[in-house]
Structures are given as C-alpha cells and as structure tokens.
Image 1: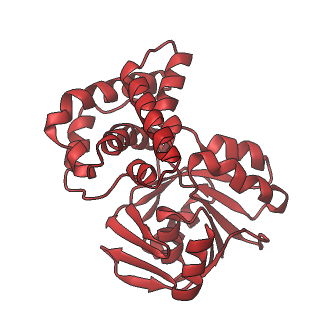
Image 2 (image 1 turned 30 degrees about the horizontal axis):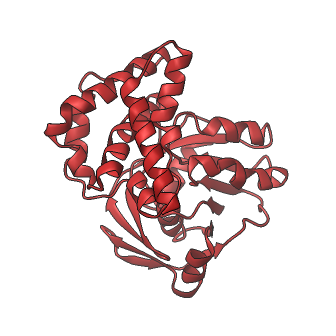
Length: 297
C-alpha cells in the first residue's frame, strides 16, 4: 500500500516514519523539512531512537492505486491540502483524518463526496517537532479509527508499524474526550509556556472543572456523555507528561493555533444549542490575542 501523509508536522512525520518500515510512504511538508529528510532521513528521538529513510515532497503529486492518505495538517489547512487531490481520488483510496477538533472530518467528506471513504481517527501519541527532519516521541499511545468496512484492515496496518491501531466502538465519544483534553491542556499551557504536566496539577482543578463542565454540557446536547471522573482521569494520565502542547509550540513559532476548532468550536456548538460557555470563550479570546501578537512579533 502507498501511504501519502499530508501535513509533515510532528504527528505526520512520526506516523510516516514508522509506517515507512513496511510501506512506501510520501511525506508532504515544508521545503526545509523536506530537504532535511531527503538528505538525512527522519530522526525520531525521545522514547524511540531511530532514523527512517522515506520520500518527502512539497506537493502531493499523483495518487497511485490503493493509497491511504493520512491527513495530519492543522485543521484550518484541511481544505488547502485536500482540494487539489479531489480529482485524483479513486474508490480504492481512503482518507484517514488524524487531526484535532470537533467534526473536522466533515469538510473533507464534503470535498471527497462519494469518490472515496473519509474516516475519522484519534491520535493518542505525544510527539513534538524538534527541528527540520527531527521529531521527539514524548508519550506512546494508540490510534482509534471509526467503524467502517475498511477500518479493521487499517487498524492492523497501523498496529504492524507500532502505531497501535484499533477500531473504536464509539468514535464520537473518543473525539469529544480528546477535544475536552485539548480544551484544557492546550490553552493553559500555551498561555503560560509550561509543560503539559503543569496543567494536570491539582492547583488548577477549579478552573479545569469549569472548562470541562461547559464542554460536557455541550457534548450532552450533542448526544455524548462525558464521564463524571473526567478531571481525575485527565490529571492521572497527563500528570507525568513533559510534552509541550501543540498550541504552545504553535505560539512559540509564531504560527496560527487551532483554538477555533477546540474551545472556539465548543462555544459555537454551545450557542447552537442555546448554551453559554463563558470560560471557553475567554480562553479562545486570550489565545486569539496571543496568537495575533506572536504572528506580528
């Protein structure tokens, strides 16, 4: 199977590297990253220490038969990444959206139409982008895929490459849980430039309860129940993490964040259901202001 990774950031580069051990992989990324990979390969550090040789390009090119497209761009770049490929999609193509945010796959499904399946996936690995050609694995995890006739084969393919693929019995619940984690961890760490474990500390529990409470109320209107012990689970799971959140990394690099697809998306969906989310709205506004300042500076 040929694998095309659209968005060679931290996650895309890591997934492409591990998959390249068993498959023909093409990473699509920025010129400096692509040039470094062409010269030196992808180096993974942290919990994994390995160098992987694989193809990288700044544009996708043709879509061969039996291609798996991993969409790992930022959510706001989905359309720009997928639209140029729409006429090249085939019935044996499959797009797996491995991105943050609420229902980010819906736009991709609208673009692809009935040309090929578009599936939602949830990534639970922690990876940071160190420099061109180098990513650091900070936390092992797994990859969930929504139920579909092709999902089991995709899960097996990922598992065989060390990406712990599995078919989720309830991808919407997993999506919401990942979104809520990101609504807590991302803005708090991005505002303070602290590691993830700091945001998982007990001193912030009162604030986190308000963030989670608003998210859980919107999720309930969306048909998803959030576990009562969500805060305790979050603190336990992320307490040891020395990772830098993706939003923190974006602000440090002066790049656009995904706040509109996380806290902002919760606020927007809450409004459609007649629910006010003042804490999430405030976080979205603060990050928006920091983002504007970082991009100008």
